[in-house]
Amino acid sequence: MQYVTLNNGLTMPQLGFGVWQVADDAAQAAVETALESGYRSIDTAKLYENEAGTGRALAASGLPREELFVTTKLWNDDQGYDNALKAFDASLDRLGLDYVDLYLIHWPAPARGAYVETWKALERIHSEGRAKAVGVSNFTAATLDRVVEEGDVVPAVNQIELHPYFSQEAMRAANARHGVVTEAWSPLGQGKDLLQDPVLGAIGAAHGKSAAQAVLRWHIQSGNVVIPKSVTPSRIRENFDVFDFELSGDDMDKIGSLNRDGRIGPDPDTLG
Ligand code: NAD
Image (cartoon, rainbow, N blue to C red):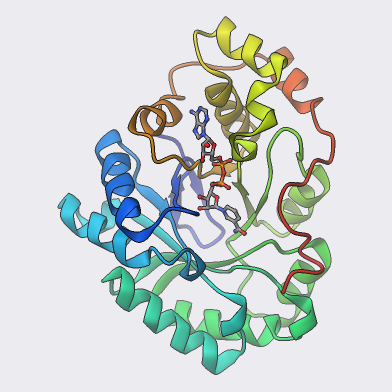
């Protein structure tokens, strides 16, 4: 496993396990498989309705809490200072934890006009030690700038849609300017067209690896944190098995040139 160091000194595994669109019971089984396979970082959210199942898997693993890195997120309906504090307590309760490692604002939802005061609540949660780090998700350059200007704490992470068809170079640079780590959601492009791309298949095959493994390796060598999702045990293990090979500069350039601004998910300027 490789780690990144966040701007508050906390270390975060560069590869984690995402559980979006996994029902609560299935999430428990999938997270247990992930932990057995070596993953130590888990990415959930209130929206996913599987914090409880995730928490059960963490407890059942018997792993020491300090070996785990748990992320959850505040949903848009819970924005606002007081609402955010309450939503955080409820998430901790469902997870069965007394702290999370990373708490994120899920979307800026700019039409609500509440993300700055929401951020102040996350700063308070952080100062109380109940989130070891706080960050944002789906923040644009403009919404990130505003939080940095008006807040006391710079977000540790910005979790954004990012894969070879949507490589987000400008947003990665905007994050880097503030010392914010870029975390890639849907790193495999949700397993759709991207993984059928012949360039990725060929690069993977040349290293004795799959297209998915080539993509995850590209993220890691690019410096992104990645959180691929699967409920299939063999794929959960496959996605973790990316630390025994290295892409060449030429491989990296070829994957980098696949960008087609192919956003899959919602536009952060309008969702909310
Ligand atoms: P992903 O890019 O991780 O793709 C997952 C899908 O790819 C799987 O459902 C499966 O169909 C396929 N797949 C996985 N491993 C494979 C393999 N080895 N070979 C072939 N196919 C494979 O998509 P995702 O779930 O959207 O994103 C990952 C995580 O990111 C989520 O689970 C969630 O934790 C997070 N996320 C966050 C946001 C946000 O707004 N912050 C949005 C979406 C996702």
